[in-house]
Length: 498
Image (cartoon, rainbow, N blue to C red; front, side, top):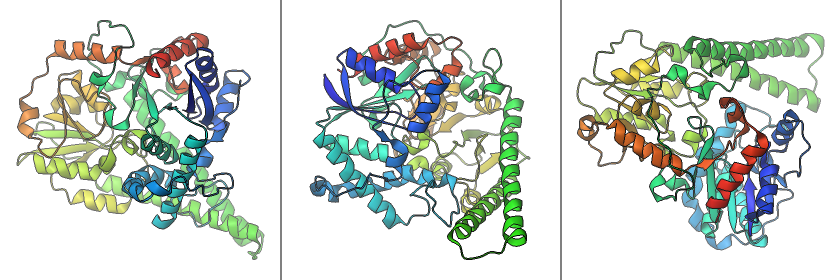
C-alpha cells in the first residue's frame, strides 16, 4: 500500500473515499488537504459525522499560512531551476484577487496574494516550494491524488514538486457532460489525451445527440432554477445572473450608505485602529462597486447590435474567469485576447470573429485596458449575451475556444473546433489543436464523420473513472446513492493508482 496525499476541494466525501482506499489496501493517506469549512458544511448537509478531519486547510496553504514556517533547506538545489514555473504560478495565484480588487487594508480573512507585489509573490512561491518538498520527503510520499486540476496556486506548487521528485500524481476532473464519470490524467500536459490511458471501464455504444445549449445541465447548480429534466431556459439563465448581480450590488450600495452615515454623521472619525480598518474596507467596497459599474459601461459600449450572421465568421465565446479551465489548462492562452489576436491573423480578409461574454462574468479580468486592447483587434465584434450560442455555432465557419464546452456542442452538430488549451475532447475527430504551423484551410476542409466520432467517444468513455467525485455534480443525476457512489469511485481509483 502506497503512502499518499489526498488533495480535495471541500466536496464533503473525501474522508469516506480515504477510508475505503485504505481498507482496500490501495493507498494510505498520510496527509489529507481539504477545506475544513466546506468539508464540514457538506457533511452537515449529508447529516453525518466525519470519519476524520483534514490535516491541512488548502485555504491556509493557498494564502501561505504555513504554521510558523521555517526554511528546511531541502529545496535549495532546485531553487534556480524553478524560476521558469513562476509565471504559471502567477496565473493561478492571481485569481485570488477577485475578492478584493482594491483592498487598501489586508484583514485576517483577505487573501495574502491581494495587491502583493511581484516580489512578495515570488517569496510566497519559494516558501511553498520548500514547504512541500520537505513535506513529501519527510513523509516518504509515493503518490498524490488531486480531486481536481491544480489551479489555485499552492496545489500547483505541490504538483510541480511531485514531478521534480518523480512522485506519481493522479489528477481527477469532474465532468458536467458525463456527471457519473470523471476524467483523469497523470500529468497536466497529458489531460485529454485518452489514447495513452488504459481501459478501466466497459465499452458501451455511444450515440451522439444534437446538444442544444438550452438543454445542457452544467449551469443547473442553482437548485431553484432546475426544472424536472435539468433543462434551463436561456431567458431564465439571463434573468438569474442579472438578478444575482443586482442583489449583490444592492447589498453593497446599502453597506456603503451605512458606512457613510456611521463615519461622517453618527461618530467622530478618530484614530482608533478599528475605525481605520473599517474605513479602509469601506473604501475598498466602494471601489469594487465602481469597478463593476465601469465594467458594465465598457461591456455595453463594446457590444455590437448591427451584426449579420450570414457573414463568414468564427465563433469564440469568452470563458468565465477565473476558472480552472483557463487557469490550469490554458497556459499563456489564459490571456483570451492573445487567442483573439492569433485567430485574427489566421482568418481570410472579410471574415469576422464574433465573441460573446460569459453569462456570470463580472469585472475581474475585464478592466478598461482589456477593452482598449480588444478594440485594437480589427475584425472582432462583441455580440449581445442574449444571442443563442447554438445559432452562432451552427452558422459559424468553425468554433474556436480554449477548453470550453462549446467545443463539444459544436462537434455534436458536425462543426469543427479550434482549441488553444487542454480540452477534454482534444483527441476527438474534428478538433484541431492550435500551433504555429496551423493552416486554416485544414479545419475548413475537414468533414466530421459522426460514426467515427461516436466510436472515438465510446473509447474515451471507457477510459474514464466511474462515480461522482464532486458533490455539486450530484445535482445532474436524478438518483445518487452515496455508498454505491463511493464504492465505484474507489474501484476506479484502484485501477488508476496501481
